[in-house]
Amino acid sequence: MSDKSKTGRRCGFVALVGAPNAGKSTLLNRMVGAKISIVTHKVQTTRARVRGIAIEGQSQIVFIDTPGIFTPKKRLERAMVAAAWNAIDDAEEVVVLYDTTRGGIDADTRLILEGLKQRGRQALLALNKIDAVKRERLLALAAEFEAVGVFSRIFMISALSGDGIDDLRGHLAAQMPPGPWHFPEDQVSDMPMRLIAAEVTREKLFLRLHQELPYSLTVETEDWQEFDNGSVRIAQVIYVGRDSHKGICLGKGGATIKAVREAAQKDLEVMMERAVHLFLHVKVREKWSEDAAHYRAWGLDFEA
Image 1 (tube, helix red, strand yellow):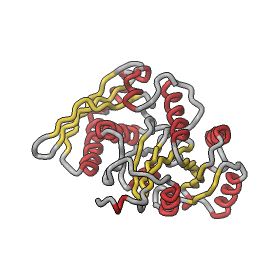
Image 2 (cartoon, one colour):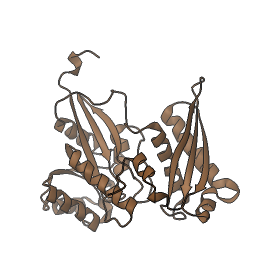
Image 3 (cartoon, rainbow, N blue to C red):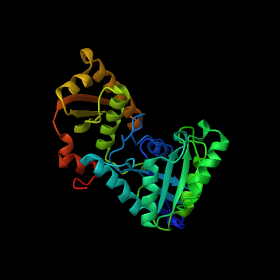
Image 4 (cartoon, rainbow, N blue to C red):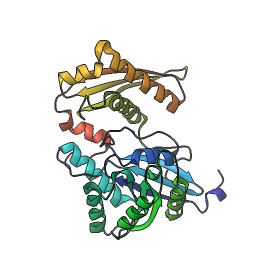
């Protein structure tokens, strides 16, 4: 690309924040045009700060999909919420995403609004799932948020269908400060592929197990081998906290783990555009959530 085409470039960071399960990961994947963040019906599934990179005209927008902000009780929850607030402090723009089907402003969202006020931060509000709520309700909700005094602009969107996304992305592109791009043009995330692969498997576990298994599981990519024919062999370990959880993950006759492996492998092959050979093993590691090494891998602060 010529130097001339690089003139007028802009680049900056945008933090996507909201209560758990507001639709932040779906929005990030929609903005970037690729699946890089875990999306399930369960809350609090995003653990690390996931960065997605989008190009809009001459602007490179680096989105940070944060863990949902809520009142934390455990060490892992404290680290997740601390990561979300750090992202807000680091970003040029903040987008607060709200699930309009939840009704009025809930306690978790009020926590976010108070935090923004304390920091003196202005933000953009994205009212999500507008196709599921009547227009009168949307207007009343927008007025309620506007009265809080922290929003410079309100967008009506559907992260799932894409309605309103172009307007939001265009506005963000115009707000990015002038400067060189931080990442190559074809890069969609700065997360290591090993970590993205582990997140894909973790998503399939959540989708498959529904309410059977608590949040006490994690996935690590232990081995990654690339072959001359372009294929890749990925070995991952699923760590659970109890023996009973191991049985749930495996399923009767290994049916559950087989289904999870097939679904994750299929997603990874589409994502990486090559043959993937995925191998999964389930191990019991009590109190894995107290292991500082896991936090470092996710970019979280163990001492938060």
